Length: 381
Image 1 (tube, rainbow, N blue to C red):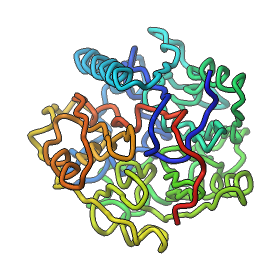
Image 2: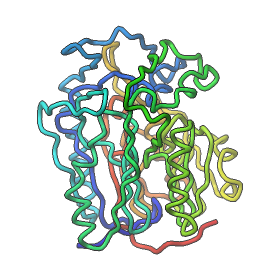
Image 3: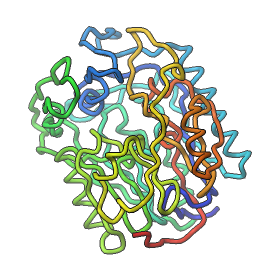
Image 4: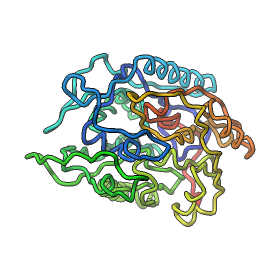
């Protein structure tokens, strides 16, 4: 088996892990979920519906059930993604399937139903030949990387380093709530308050929390989005762990968490960006790159949902593309404007179906974790 080797998002892709959507039945509305998705759940502009706490009560929890039809269609699309990648000559690995009706997982003072390993970009950061499991932000995802453990173990046996960042306790007081409570941080302000954190005997104060999808890998440079103190603590750990081999750059509040639907690198010198202003949030030396800004999302390219469907991402989620090489890019087939824009800049878009990206919080980049790409560590700055 080939060992792990990936330094960026564009070198020719050889091996990848594709997530699983099986047995994704609900979203558990509790403090960690609401803090993580705060910008998405509570914004009042056109991108998101207004939301109140009149959530569906299932088994006594604030659990938001997902319609079975959406789950089945999501699974079809994820499996089609895996088939497409295999047809392109990429070796595809898969996580273990979450069992149906899986028992709740629990920590000190909390309990949450687990979700499948779907958005696997989030809880892992791969840097060169090292797999780094990152500290999870959402309680229901606390054990998610255990579904990936057999794949990681294979790569470890083949020579990869395998590291786990310190695991947070995730009590209520672990979370920095300043971003969620900052009315300047969301358009229109929140439509409901974040719950008051409840103290427990297991509190350790603010803890490091960070998702791999907050990191943009550019060879020796890694750009990380920081929106709160949890992120800042995790970046401090990464700096101590990775420097001087890598240069860590912080961008402040480019988004509430992930930046891979804000900006992605398509090849050296070229970014795909949500809007022109992204350029000025980047480190100065990367402001010289070309920034491709696609047309505004077309509302007709999305399914219509009802008030009892929990929408988790903005219409810009389709910027979450996956590069197969410096010239080939997997793109949602529904995004004609984005496809034409990429073609006009010399890229070859590969259209793939993905219908319910707004309900499950991810696009092609989120659903995948590239583990082997051709190419060596280079300095692009």
